[in-house]
Amino acid sequence: MSAIDLRAITASYPGAHRPALDAVTLAADRQMVALLGPNGSGKSTLMRVLVGLHKPDAGEVFSPRDRTSLGVVFQSPAVDDLLTIRENLILAAALCRKPRPFARDRIAWLVTQIGLEDLLDTRCGRLSGGQRRRADLARALMGQPGVLILDEPTTGLDIDARARFWSTIERIRAEEHLTVLAATHLGDEAERADRAVLLRQGRIVADGSPDELRRPLGGRVARIDLRPGADHDPIRPWLESAAPQARWWSGGAIVPDAHLGLIETCPMDLATVRIAAPTLEDVYLWHTADQGAAV
Image (tube, rainbow, N blue to C red; front, side, top):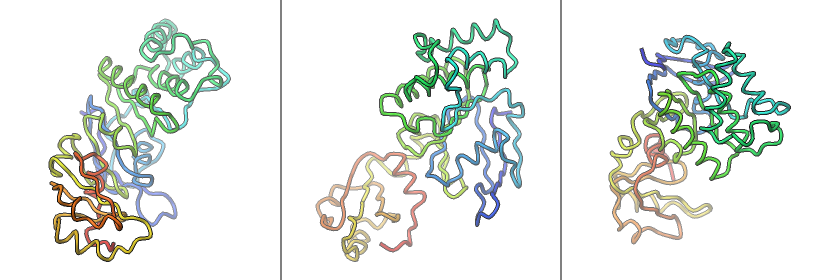
């Protein structure tokens, strides 16, 4: 059985007009899987179901069954600011019912891997945002879990701290053969994963490796963004003629297999055109576009 195995999960909240998750099935084993989607797409609810904090209306969580096999990094660090990093990690080991010799050795290994050696006896309330996030990661890994859950883990971090966080995750994942499920709304973070699962309004709209998801868009994609306040009436007939394969979204359009002629003919006072290799953000817009939407 896979380390993560969710089948036909439907979950809702009281008073909501639609389910937060609608018959979602997901399996993963020793992979890093990114859940990509905006706020409200169902990412956090899926994770809450997985860790047992939200009971689904239908469907079943086949694995993990044992919550001790889970490590969780929340959007806000869960370390105690009044305790040192060492004290937080000792407490985490005790909560996982790990013996003291294990805790001692685990702390020594983790702080080396994560880069916390010089901060081990610093109170967490005195740490920078990036340092607190790394301390929180160490806390989540103290029990030596088989599955690591990351819910928007780089919220509030600067570019350098984000890059360091993900490099650390990749190094430890390879070392300990972890299955990682990471929720993000950033396409560049999802690019680091073995698989990206694209969620919209509680449903999976695409699932595959970043390369597999980008392939249908060709080597170059055009992203056409409408200028705010401009008269958009001429844009649709222009694009229907220049690129009938385009798909519209609320702020413009996505064109697969794009050609440079779009730049030459685009009414630049009404819209801007970017032509580049497709990103996962482009893929998301392609899969969630409303082809019948009005400009």
